Amino acid sequence: MNQAPGAAVPAHIVIVGGGGTGAALAHDLVLRGLRVTLVERGEVTSGTTGRHHGLLHSGARYAVSDATAGAECIQENMILRRTAPGTFEENDGLFVALTDEDREYGRRLVAACEESGIPSRELSAEEALRLEPGLNPELLWALQIPDGTFDAMRLPLRWFATAKHNGAVIRPFTEVVDVTSASRCVTGVVVRDHTDGRESRIAADMVVNAAGPWSEAIAAMARVDVPVQPSPGVLLALRGRLCNMVVNRCHPAADGDILVPQRGLTIVGTSSWLVDHPDDLGVPEDHVRAMYDEGAKLVPAVRGAEQRAAWSAARPLIGGRGGSTGRELSRTFECFDHARSDGVEGFVTISGGKATTARAMAEKTADVVCAKLGIDRPCQTRDVVLLPHTAYYLS
Picture 1 (cartoon, rainbow, N blue to C red):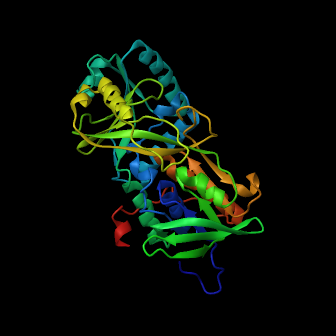
Picture 2 (cartoon, rainbow, N blue to C red; picture 1 turned 90 degrees about the horizontal axis):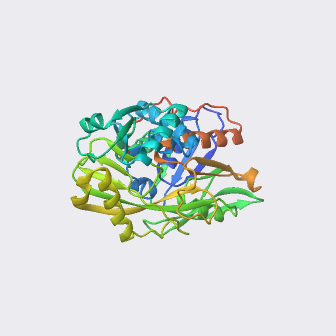
Picture 3 (spheres, one colour; picture 1 turned 30 degrees about the vertical axis):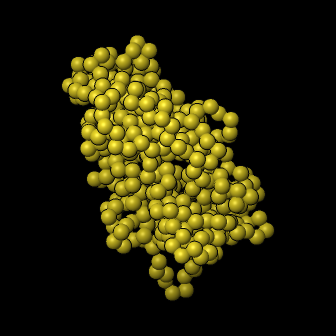
């Protein structure tokens, strides 16, 4: 980053984690004039970010049970459409009622969407089937909302590309093995370069822990605690585009109740359970069967569709241990300034949230970082149009 003669060298921020949140944060911080180095133990987006179903959330999925997360999603939905044009398939979504219980939940959903500012339109069964002929013909009612779909990796690659263009250093295959500190102030990280096995230290004015479900382990290196509960879920990729809109079951979130069209595939998800470590996931066969069984209730063609892939991804949910499935934990996000919570200066953690809210998570974190450094520069990521994802590999 070019500096005028005699100007002070900008503060250096090390970001740990090369997923969507880390990418959006690198983009935000360099726009505010800071030096940024981002490290990721694998390839960028190779963790949870590259494994989600590619839903651009309208927020309706959370509007009834988690109004904060719902409102966050619809706000970010509109910002992302503006700043990342061409990334999304703006195909809308449907919440489909198959039973009287679903229909009753739908009444609550309509009211919750209105309260959260989520546009919605009620449809009769006939209207829904005209829009989406592959739906279960026994449906009773549907609600149309502004869901969308996108390739899980292309949006973060646009943040990475724009951040690199503006001076950020992105270091994949670089794993943090320790966090260094002096007098309860974090001073940098020790990393292992997996391309040559060498270890080195990166000095920093501040370290931001954006490691998603691995945030707890990174925080422990700084001798602080972060209440992150890894919650995996199984997803299926089925051959064939079995729907053209996102199709959701109109009931509280449960297994196999969402279908997301992705090019020539249909993604069915997802289950939910809890693990102690985010690398301990697995793909339980009974969860795969549940995706088929529950997905077929929405779109009958799911039952006979050929499976292309099955995988799991760990959600980095905010909350203590001891839950049952993880569905009881909020999908909102939280930024921890460990100087306040643990008396450790120079270390900040951001976790929770959704792929749709990564930019907002980054904005909140960048605000905290800048306030701690005495920097008064506003966020620009609500308006800056991103470079194409291919620019990441060309810069």
